[in-house]
Image (cartoon, rainbow, N blue to C red; front, top):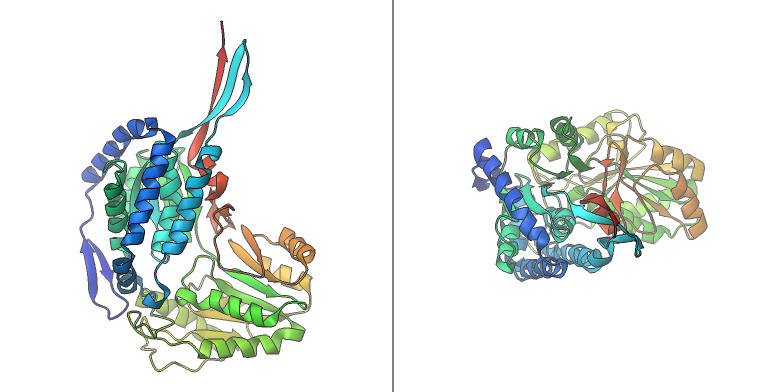
Length: 455
C-alpha cells in the first residue's frame, strides 16, 4: 500500500494499492504490444495528442494546486507548476520534427544511406515529489512524441499526480496502454527492470535510489537516465550586483521549502561583499511567513515529510555544535515536525555536513572567499554536480569560471531554472544522462543505420 501523509497536519491524504508483480508484468506487456502501432502513427499526430494533454492539465489547475499543497506542502499562492510544465512540453513538441529527423548521408542512383532515430520501446519514468508535474513531463512528453509507450511510477508522496496526468493524456486521445500510471513498490520495480521489461528507465531521486536502479539493470543493457542528488553552489564575485544576487540566491535556497533539485545549498561571497550579502539574506528570510500552504498569506510551507525536516534540523544542530552561527530565530509556526524555520548559517566549513551532504531543505551556509580561484576550489569540493550560479558583470569572466566548475549547468546572474532548450544533466554523484533539448530526444531513441544498395 502506498500512503501519502499530508505535511499540513500529518493525516493520511491518499492511499493506493500497489500492483502485484504479475499485474505489473501484464501492464508492461500491454505497453509493449501497443508500442508498434503508436510509433507507426504520424509524428504530427503524436505531437498534437501531447499538446492536447498539456492543455487539459492546464484546465485542471484549479484542483491540482490545492492537491499539491496537501500532498507535498507547496503554498497555493504560487499557483502550481503549469507554467514550467507547459514550457517544457511545448518546447519539446516544437523541436521534435527537427530533432527526430533522419540524417541522410547519401541518396543517389546507387545508394540510400541514412541514420534514423527509433524509439526504445517501453519507457519507465520514475518521478519525484518535489516538482511532480515538471519533472515527469521532462521525459513523458518527448518519450511519447518519439514513439515510445510510457509507464509512469510516481512518488508515494504525490500519488494523485500520476492519476491526473493519466486522466489528461487519456482524455486527449492517447490510448490507455500507451500511457499508464502505475503504483509499484521498490521490489516490483527492481524485478521488472531486471527482467528487461523496459527499453529505457528515467529516474529522478536520491543517490541511493539511483544506485538501486543501476543494480537492478546490471547486465540487462537497459538505457538509464539518472538525476540524483545535488549540493548546488552560488558564487557572488567582487563585481556582482549584491542586491540582485541576494534576492535570487536566497529565493533559490528557500523556495519550495528548499526542496529543489537545483536549489542553492551553499553560497560563497567575495570578502568585500560578505557582510552586506549576509545582512540582506537575513532580512529576506525574516520576511517569510511559515504556515499552512492552503493559506494565501503563506510564503513558505512545511517540508513534504517530518523525516525530511528532521534531517535538516540534524544538519543545522551539528553545524552549530561545531561553531556555525545561526542567524534566524525560531519561527513561532515551527512545530518541531514538518514546519521548519528557514535558516542561514555563517562560520561554516566543508567539515560540516550542512556544506557537504544534500540538505534538500530551507537552510543555506554562506562563506567568504578571497578570489575566483578559491571559489572554484570550494564549488568543486563536492560529490555532486548539477548546477552552479555565478554572479558577475563580466560574461567572459563567468564563462572562464564556468569552464572550471564540475557541474552539469552553469548560470550567470540567475539560478534555480531549467531551460528546456539546454540539456538538463549532471556529473559525479548527481547521475548521468541528459533530458530535454535535442539531446533529450537522442537519449529516448536509438540510432538505426540504413545502407540500401539500389539496382
